[in-house]
Amino acid sequence: MSTHAATAPSALAPDAASASTANKSLVVGIAGLAVTAIGIALSPDKHGPVMSYLVGVTYWTAIAIGMLMLVLIHHIVDASWSVVIRRQWEHCLAAFKWLFVLFIPLLVLAWMKPGFVWPWMDLGQHIHGGGTVGADILYQKKSGFLNLGMFTAMTIVFFAIWVWVSWLVRTASFTQDVDGSATWTFKNRRNAAIGLPLGALTLTFAAIYWIKSLEYHWFSTMYGVWFFANCIRGALCSSVIIMVWLYARGDYKGILNKNHFHSIGQLMLAFTVFWAYVTFSQYFLIWNANVPEETFWYNLRELNHDGSTNQWWYVGLVILFGHFFVPFFALLSYRFKITHHIIRRIAFWVLTVILIDLCYNILPALKDEHGDSLPFLSINLLWVVTSVIGIGGVCIWAYLRSLPTTKLIPIKDPRIGECLTHHE
Image (tube, rainbow, N blue to C red):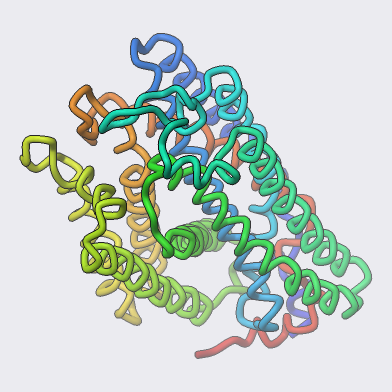
């Protein structure tokens, strides 16, 4: 089997066609970012486009984090079936440094105009119900954590850790293609032992800082786990799209078999249930406790100040059925998991609902004069689309630029033979 892996065309580095596709992705990314920048410049209410940009950055960063966690989990459990897929996860990690660059405008804005995105950054800003942030006892108790200097430093630390851990695992994996030493496998296992707790902590605090603190009064002990579930689901779905694309292009033919698709489909199903468990637990605990400091977050996403139902209530139903019931029943089918065009459609569906879920968590922070969340179907949705396209184009460019730099699969990994003969 090792001979087959070494001689098959799909085991070699992809040809220069990837460079052309990468350039096109970069052009699309720059165009999307340019349209978003124009929207921010020309919009009378710049708050909406900026918040939409935050959705885009968070969405793609979540997918990259999921890719990193999958690589680390692969190494720590010494998985075999995912060896050939792992290389694509490693290429996706090249996006982290560019995601940091794309996050910098939000940091600059936070310093130039405190409170514009995250209200607690402006201590003089009036809060709903009267008073200011600085005089709010809930903010005072959290001020050691919620302050502009800490926010900036922690954000830099998050990306520094993600870039560093990514560099460690990529370097060891790519070097093994050259010398074939099993030392690199053991080194990556040690890297995973360090990287997994660091990844868990950083993704949790990133979710709290970037998203949850938009409503800093709110309490939830499940938020980091919710974000982790979306990170992994986004990474798995992106993996499926990449796998189908490379298989259709001919690179993965003779390498991937239906059992690889079945295995990743099983993980997609498992994390669908995991997401539902976490999300239901958060809602149930808050509903059952009925504490105003917790229930207001859901009230904003269900009712206006006059008691009428707002658009976010219907978005919540879309998330409930689209994020759980549709993919859950679809992924129960063995045939759906191994049929390329079907599992790809499921992947695109879940990626779309993950984006809606992030909108549900971020955009209701935009409020009108009555304190009601602005409608979901508004001009802000346009800037969400342009931001996701723009940042996504840059991330795909980073992946495609990394793709031709090494073998498509880790041909000298000790478990490559076991992977190529993988069965359920």
